[in-house]
Image (cartoon, rainbow, N blue to C red; front, side, top):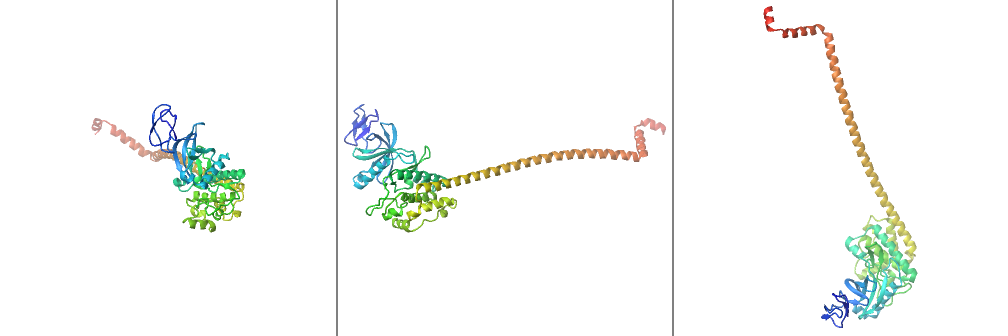
Amino acid sequence: MKFQCNMCKGIVVVDFEGDMVSCGMCGAECRVPAPMSDGVVIDDFLIVKKLGSGGMGDVYLAHEFSLDRKVALKILKDEISKDEVNSESFIREARSVASFNHPNIIQAYKFGFDEGVLFFATEYVQGETLQDSLKEEGMLDELKVLKIAEETVIALRYAWEKRQLVHRDIKPENIMISHEDGRTKLMDLGLSCLGGEADDGDQISGTPQYISPEQIMGTQIDNRTDFYCLGATLYHLLSGEFPFKGNLQEIVKQHLAEAPRSLKKHRPDLNDNTVKIIHKLMKKDPEERYQSADKLLKDIIKTKSILKNSCKSKKHIHVSSKEVTTHFKTEKRKNKKDESQKNKILAVLGLVLLVTFGGILLLSTKMLNPNKAEEEKTEVNEKKLDPKTKAVSD
């Protein structure tokens, strides 16, 4: 076993485990780690932590010494590595991925045998699988799913055109979304095979919830097989449910003989084109499915465009409504202001008219009764006379 010294970061080589040993480079006492635990070195890779487990092996985040980069290190389980069929499948995956260089397919770095284990180093993508997304969200946004579908089909088209390769295990767990750029990454080609091949024996290759009828029947497969698996995957992403439910036998029978429940029953909000695409992908007869990736891509891109334009129209209507409301409120405030000014003017005019009318009325009264006015004037003057003057007079 090889592991990294915690003090000097040198490589320590031992032939036992679970005890202390002195580092040959710095002399520090180091505890020998358990196999495949943090700090263990496999070939050119230092295990950092365990990321997860699959049916055939465990996946670790590791550091590649020579190129100073993070990698995903897949290590075949001991019990699986002893099985010739599973070992061949693991090797086939490594060779398949190694022959590809595509932005939507996980990039292979190195494959080999070291410390008694088969390992396979690939590109490390910091992100989440669609299985993780389903657990978190329940069901996914329609436009997001169409983008995933588009990029997955592009990856499948590349694999088919380059090597006539059929993935055979398209499912949410094998599709990852990068947190860095949002790109879709197709993973795990362990069940992949060349088009035209058929399953031998009684073992079915694939995942029951997403498997195609021809995989179940053991007949020849091609790229249309992956289309069916993709259709079942998209169905799950949009509805939050598997296309078919029940025990294994019931699910297999439904894949062979029953159409899945309409997506509209789960999601009435879905665009009709989206529903048509997915149900066409899941036709029992491969001849009734899409016959090429190009035709499928054309329909997906067209539907994406329709949805985007629909979103823009709704946004435009919303903005226009807001503008109308704002304009109405502005006009309303303006009308209130004009009305207030009008009331003020009317009040002033009313006051002026009242004063004018009062003056005219008073003047008219004096002109009509001049004697009364004179008598009032004399009376006033008499009241102003001195009391003594009044007494003498008397």
